[in-house]
Image 1 (cartoon, rainbow over the protein chains, first blue to last red):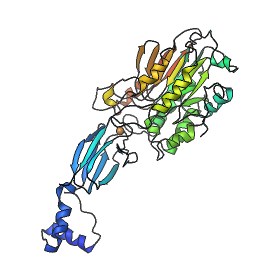
Image 2 (image 1 turned 90 degrees about the vertical axis):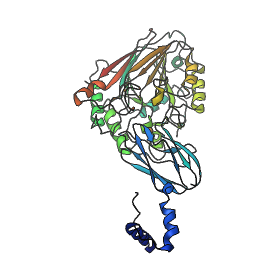
Image 3 (image 1 turned 45 degrees about the vertical axis):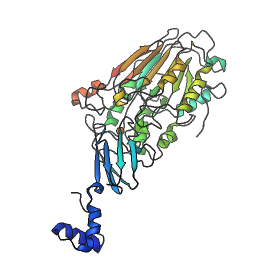
Length: 124
Length: 316
Ligand SMILES: [Cu+2]
């Protein structure tokens, strides 16, 4: 279960409480349904031994994908079409990007371009 | 940036051009001794009236110093780089200059570049650089490197110069890499190379240096350069071509026709033989083994002989 973001509004606090206690006011249901849809929960891609894992993921629009470098060599994340590009990630450093539009996003490591991955964004 | 052609007949191989290049020098590693090839015809040096004549000399190659690296198996890559400098200072024959084939730093940080400069300066030798992918990690994707070493170079930093009858070409194959690809030279650089070599006599010895190998050592790990064949096609007619690379942190060599390929050891950490291990990450060897897997290369150019002799020494 991903961690909830820090409560920033009364609504978010209600939501947090509702999740904690399983109590769900009817007015909050649509919000909760959107927030809890499994496809838009944050997704992590690990970089381990010069491989993106998993190499291909399918997510809903609005999903934030986070890459974590678990190698002792730096890597970075570059979209094939250059629509996003991380700074260099040293060991244990992370990069996140939120995919809003449906489509297929190929990416690679700008240092080691034989390392490739793909994010498929489509409405569930 | 000051873009002039070191090898062109005008600004080319004049002394000032050469000295300018030397201003950008900053690394040390392998020592190459270049042997003069068949220099009976008029070499470029004479053609442009430069005083340099074909003669025997040695030069060094150092590579992959990764200053800033501090993980197993080497907690201090700056320290082993200093040891390499100590090795250079102790050489029986003083080399004319040093070629550093890239990955000067680990993360392209200013401090790392500064530290690397300080270390190699202790050799008091001119140092010619090309960048590795680790030297392109600043926000400007290589601007920091070019700011330090780009003076008098073309494009992303490529250049050539002549020394005692031998033509040296520094190529960049770590810029604008393509998804799924390996190293890349790119159309602009290839065009420049073709022009740079076009009017040279086939008898002139050529030394080409770049970070990633210019032949495919192991494709699955990206150990090769996608468009190297094009570059090598321009070199085919020359009688003596020596290709010096780094990147893979181990010695490999191959001879194909008149072209001798060689990769140098790193001064920082070893890497596995291609495919022998889960990844091309650092090979974590016991501390007592580390120094025997790091090293520098000496090249000897003997005037009148065809091949450049390469000798690899470890830091052990
Ligand atoms: Cu990488």
